[in-house]
Each structure stands twice: as C-alpha cells, then as structure tokens.
Image 1 (cartoon, rainbow, N blue to C red):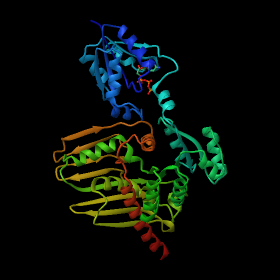
Image 2: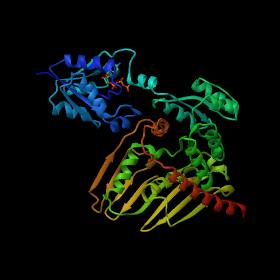
Image 3: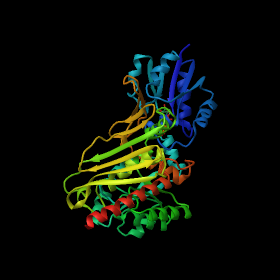
Image 4: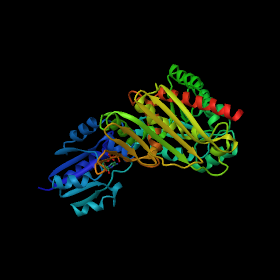
Length: 449
Ligand code: CTP
C-alpha cells in the first residue's frame, strides 16, 4: 500500500485545496492530511486565519479524500510523521517547490501544480472588510509598521500623515501608498483606523482626534503622560464602540503568553522578584538623548519593563520608587522603577545612553524563568532550578520583526474576532500612564531646580 502525506491550513476551504487533495490521493492508496494548529500558523507568521481548526478539519474530511487526518503543531513534525506513518510520498502544491526537498531523505517528494488565481489569503481579503489604516508620523518606526502590515490579512496601509509635508511625501513615494493628502481632516476621511507613531508629546492629541472622528487607534507607547488622560481616552473609545490599543510589541509575541503561563502555573513556585530591562545606546543627537521634556530612557523604554510586572503581579502595587541617572540637559539616561507588592519586588530598568543586559528574570521559590536579551523580542526562554544541570527550554518562534502580531491583534479587535481583551488591557495601559505621570512629576522637579 502506497501512503501519501500532505499538509496545509485549509482555511476557507476552496477549489485549490480540493484539487490538491484529489491529486494527492491519486498519487497512492492511502492519504494522510496534516491540518495546522492556530499556534503553529501564528509562529510561522500566518495570521488572522478565519476558520477554527475543527472547521478546517471537517472541511478536509468532507472531501472524502483523506483516509486519516492529523494535526500539525510544530517544526520538524513532517520528518517525524513520515517515519511514524511510514509514508512513501510527501506532497504539497507547487508554491512550495524546492522548500521540502530535504524530505527526499525520508520519502519521495512531489510538488503538485497549484490551482491558479485562488488562495485562502485572497478569499480572506475579499470576504473580510479591509481595515484601511492611516499612519501618523513617518519617522523611524513607520517603515517597519508598513512592511509588517502586509503580512496581516485584513490590514492595508492606505495613507500617511505628517505635518512635515516633505517627510510624508517621501514616505508616500517610497511605499507607493494609494492616497496622498496633506490636510489632516481629509486624511482622516480616507481611513478606518490610525497607527500613531508621531513624537511622544503628540500621541494623546492624535488619539483624541482620531477617536472623535470615529477611528480605531493603535498608539505607540507612551500613549499619554497622565493617568487621567489615559482614562479619558479609553473611556471615549469605549463609549464610541472603538478600539484603542497601546503598542507595546512584546505583549503580542507568541512567546510572551507562554512565559506568563509558565510563571503563573506554579513551575517556579511563588513569584518573589521580577527584573525586566531594556537599554539602547542611541545615536548622538537623537531624540532619546536630546528631548529632555518628552523623551529619555523611561519614556521611551519604561513601558517594556512594566509590562511583565503588571501582567504577572497586577496593577495594585503597594508602592513604586523611581530613580534616574541624568545626562546632559538633565534627561534620564537610566531609570529604575521599583514596585513593591506583598511578598514581591519588581524592577523595570530602562537605559538610553547606558547599556545593560536586556533580560527578563522572574524568580520564584522553586526556580526562575530566564528570558535572555532581547527579552522583548524573544523566541525562547528557560526555566532554571537549584540544580544548574536542570534547565527546561521552551520555544515559540515568530516571523519578521514581531510587529505583525501587534497589528494582527489590532485588526482582530476591530473585527471582534478575538474574544476578551487580555494581551494588554486598558487597565494595564492606564496603570503604566500612572507611573509615567509620577516619573514626569519627579523629572520636572529635578529639571526645574
Ligand atoms: N493549494 C493549491 N492551489 C491553490 C491554493 C493552495 O494547490 N490555489 C495547495 C497548497 O499548495 C497546499 C495546500 O493547498 O499544498 C494547502 O494550502 P494552504 O496554505 O492551506 O492554502 P492557501 O490557499 O495557499 O493558503 P494561504 O493563502 O493562507 O497561504
């Protein structure tokens, strides 16, 4: 008996899938079909699948071609399956030509002609309303946002705004956006949602204007400098039925949820200390080093450190102390915020002009979690114990620069396909604003001296 195996997501089951399975079956006597899990697809950068796995399995089953259906959930599984099920042929569509040649060491690899002009991505684009995104601020982060947004189905950057018209024009020309407008109100008319990546002190105003105009908003951190303003903006979004999200990328990476659940499930015992660091040596003359009012280490990077602390310990700390090392202009080149909870101390360290190890360490009574630098872009972490030889390694890969997961979350929120908000809640974002407010007050006093 000749056994054939093939794999796919089979989202929004279409004619291309049907033909592929039919021909795969015809290659042998027994067909095994591997259907991907959402987690696996997320790790390989395939975001915003529409059908849940059970629907995708049912659709494959309904063709009658599959003799057996299995689930694919990790890298390297194809080699395992081919051996486990004793397969003679591995097959996929010709869009993968060459990619699986390495499997020839285990069985015959056959690439079947792909059915032209149809794909799940295409259907997702057609059926799903596309969220037209306008970028505000065309500086360093905007190009990365633009590039990564192309991997998120349902998201399309259609316009960019910058009061510095030359910069906006240049961005527009480079990325060939469909619309160019230099008037802010016309720009708002052209979009459904905003990505705010302008200078820090302008974030809140743009968010407010966007919400007032009925737009969903994803805003770079820090969204505001005060708790009250953060509250006002989240309240406004809620009352208008709009989505407002603060862009702290680490919160949306696949590995972060794994870190949180490992920290919470008792593996390391009771959490007694968290240390989360983020540092960068910025270029001389950059905003991080010169803008003593609205930039510096804590305003740029402090939110990263606060993220795991608030996610794991909650926002009701007993006390927070903030200390900075100041550079020229009395801008902070290094800041530590130490949070005291009952039975736990947590520190967020931020450096802009001071370099330190960018790790996250969550220490407990039985062991600790080490997420090596750069923890905010991690694809793995370790659980360590008293015995130095006992190390458990966990992996959760991600694709590209990690940005697409944040964009994908934003789109899912807008489309309401994501259930309850949990990756970064409005309450956690407001709590960060409260700390930033305290930091700003302290800094004003120091700078005013
Ligand atoms: N396939 C095909 N012809 C198409 C689309 C897909 O033969 N027009 C094949 C793929 O090559 C693969 C299998 O169907 O062997 C499952 O593909 P999958 O990635 O699930 O489908 P796509 O439509 O390519 O999905 P997406 O657009 O999300 O990448």
